[in-house]
Length: 166
Image (cartoon, rainbow, N blue to C red; front, side):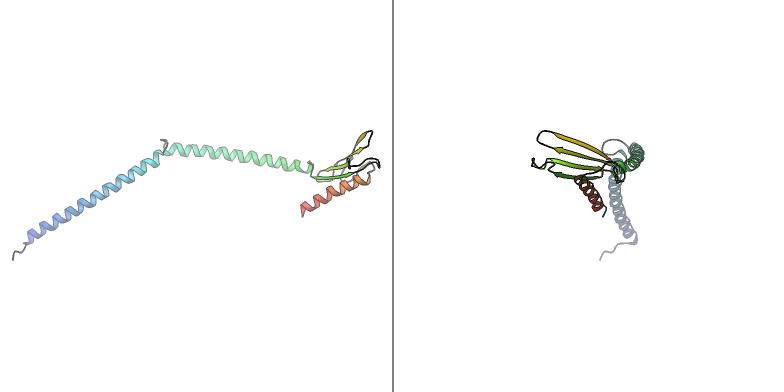
């Protein structure tokens, strides 16, 4: 039987350890190269720009968006202040003004804002002529007498406004 001496055994162990170390270092080099490629891609981006330029661009866009948000908030406040003055309540009643006409071509139209101010427009259609009247309406009251159809148009406008609030 041929046994290895301690020196020969040590040399073989050192060689095996060296081969293992070379294999491990080769693997580490490959992994390092892959990480370096990913780092370069990350730092330069896919379009060739670098990360610093990208961050600067994003910072500028964010500042511009913040400015836009402030101007939109200011515009929204202005709209909210004007909204009560806009026509919000509409009522329409069609009727026959004269007994010799048909088709309900006459109408009363109420156009009111949030406080009940606005105008009531009436059109009376007859065979020979058509007449249009406008009556101002201020906070639920008119200084002019209203016909039953005009009163119905105002009531219709008010009831639609109340049903929307619920």
